[in-house]
Length: 138
Length: 373
Image (tube, rainbow over all chains, first blue to last red; front, side, top):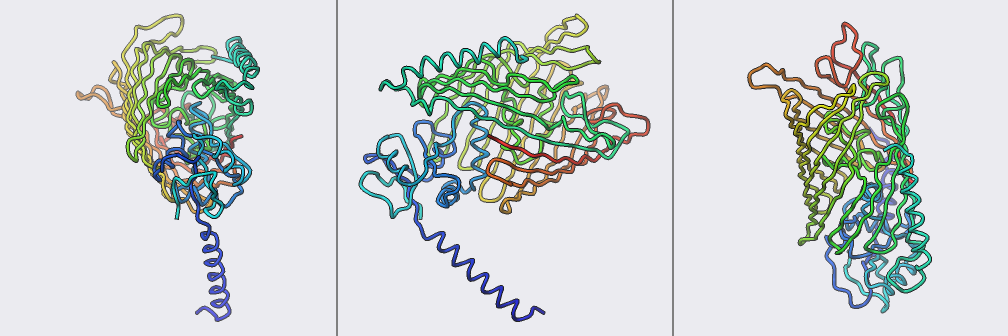
């Protein structure tokens, strides 16, 4: 039979994990393009970010950014390592280059605002009039 | 093509073209910015393999060296590739990739796997001309990129059948989004040459003339279905004699499911030739499950000569059961370990130099590190 301190520690640990998980989920992500762009479906955004559409230019946050993993999980149902493998197949058959990596959300917004073909993802709270939300990821 | 004059010429052309275009890049004329114009990438694998028998040598594909119980083999899976890409505009790019690995013969050799120019006259359409990997089966053109695949190595029972891996010619690809689906159609044509070793310093040169290929792929977010066909007139030269061309064809139907944490992949292939004795059916089933950075998997693969209806040509089968695990240790690096139980064709692949008493079975343990840069 499990002892009490073990159960208490386990419950606390579980509680903390759930709290951290809910905090991580708290930020709603949105996919953005330049003002005037049409709305995109989740499948269309997926196709852009796994190299199946070459008419749009996907932009990525650094691998260390928490939003990057969350974005890929929500949109492609795969984690960053799985997506990296997908791009390795495209890159090493000479069919394309992985999404360009920019340092932060401000850089993503600036690049998207200035290029009608660029697509990026940022926290919903950081959206302003320079960009248009083409897909919300709740 | 061994690295030599032609490779140097290719690199020279790439660099010269790049320099000319770089000078014009500052003008607002549709050219890419300099930072986007050139890219250098690479991939590689360092691996070892060992079998549990000394009564035969476990050998993959057309390689010369393999593993025994006494001999830990490092050549089977180890390879290194570097790639340079120049993308002067959205519609024009050039790619050169050199790969060093063990092929036939005693030394690891370097060969240009890819050296092509790609033009995109429309966003959905691309045309490539030059030297390219032959996409005979589902992942033929990326089977060397260990990092891009879950398994430790592509199953030889299927991917060892085509003989031809690289061709010179052209390919056209049309890719289109239809509703939630992504569809692509590819056509290729060219010629291919492959060499194997009959005996030390005696090569057999195999040539695929009039090579034609077609494939179609349907995808929706992690689910891929692909069918393909490659045909060629195959001839070969050995001991100074050129043999008449025979018709060969390779057909494949494959499926990949890679969503959430589950990975399933399966493929069925047929090799048909003018000689029924070497007609082959092959298939494999791969299943894996992501547990964080760990992905345990299992693979079952079969290659069978289908035999003749009248019994004069015997049926033969080789099959392999593997279990392994991939560990995504770092952003650009994975580790894989695999144990497989291989049952050979009677007296043949994948066990060579068999001694009396060998029972056509062997267990092979392999460990690799895959990386991309």
